Every structure is written in C-alpha cells, then in structure tokens.
Length: 149
Length: 149
Image (cartoon, rainbow over all chains, first blue to last red):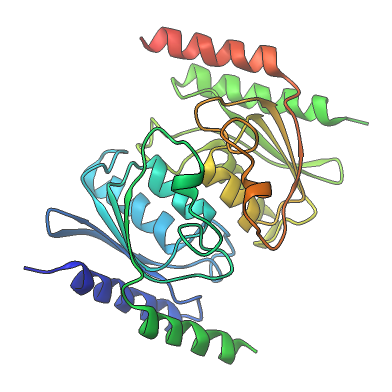
C-alpha cells in the first residue's frame, strides 16, 4: 500500500512536468481511499492566469471526475506549502488532509508566514502533514528560478 | 464619472443574476481607469466547482481580456467580503484595491474573522474599502438562505 511519501513523489512528477513547460514547478494530487482521483501542475504562465496554481487545477479536476463540490474524504498532496488562495480553495472544498513537500518561505500560509488555519477561526480545518520532501522540492525550485534569471 | 458605490451597484446586479440562478448571490467587477474590464457572478452550485466564486471568475475573465496575469492597476468591486481563497486570488493577481459591499461574518477575512492582509506579511497588499452596501447585500443573502431552508 502506498504511503504519504509515495503519493508526494507522484505529485513531484507533476512538478517536473511544470518545470519542463517553463512553469513554476509545483505539482498536486488528490487521493481518496488510496486511489488517485486527479493530478495537476501549475499552468499560470502559459495561460496567463494567476489562479491556475496546481492546487486549484487538481481540485477542479477532482470535482469534475467525482461530480461533486465537496472533497471531505480526500487528501491533497502538494509539492510546495500552499499560498493564501490555495489554502482557501482547500478549505472551500473541505479537503480532509494536506500533505506538502517543502516550505514556501515567501508566501506559504501553513507555517512560513503563519498558520492560517490556526490564526483564523474557520468552521473546520484540514489536518496538515509536512514538510516531507524539503530537499528535492527546494532543489527544483532553486534550479527553476536560477534559470529564469 | 462613476464612483465606488456606482460600480458596487453594478456588481450587485451581477449578484442578482446569481440569485436567480439559485447560486449564492455574490457579484464582482474589475475596473481599470474607470472602465469595466470584466463582470462575473458565483457559479459554484451549477458547475459543482468550489473554486467558482465571483472573484475567481472575474479575475480569470479580466486576465483573458487583457492578456496578462497581473492586474496591479485594477480595482475589484465585490458585493461580499471575500473568503480566504478569493483574498488570495486578489493578492496573486496583485489587484490594487478592493471595494466590498457587506461583511461575511462566517468566512470573511478582511474584517469578520480577522484581516489577512495585516496578520500575514505578504510582499504587498491591496487597499481595502468597505463595507459600503451592508443593507442591500445582507438582505439578498438572507433572502437566499431563507429560501434554501
């Protein structure tokens, strides 16, 4: 049976796809009961759409596949700590658990800039696990931004 | 020349469209230099997509119309105080100014549950104006949820 790190490694494969498409390399997976429901990666640059983060895309895909707007039995695997928008999308979809790879020091809202699920009194909050892949994810992020310069 | 309240009233027209489509009645407008770039309303229910809030939709539309992913010269007019996801989308699009109609006591992150742009140290933050239409917006929200029960 696959564990959190196994699924996170598959999300990392999605991040690599983004990398080779010249997108900020972030990947995401939605899993329910050990089954992969949807995969996605960041497409913000190519589509010139600031909302096309991997997390938003994977939530949209999973809702479409399952034909429902509540994912309260799902875990989202993301290579990078989510931004404010994506933490909010995860909350709105009522996702049960977040597993993330590496911290996002400049915009992450689970630990880097604070913990939005502790600081704000929402009516529910996902379980958070991570960072579980700090080295590999930090490396691909650094490589990406180095090449951009 | 139109002022903030005039534009907000147009966003309220969008909210009414949502109301008659059996969607939570929230409307949004993106304006640059007094020109309306995009209008949208909430479509979460009909499309079973938890990310289809009015704010996300109007940002996507404006980026498409303008063919760019940064809206740092734009004002977003929204009938209701934004949720975490939408505040994050507004941040990611680098929108200059938010004007909102009424507080959202259960999920609003500009004043109701806290002020996310003050509590978190992002690298920039929009100017926030509101609530400017508390009575009309609260009334349509109450009417919507009353009919739902």
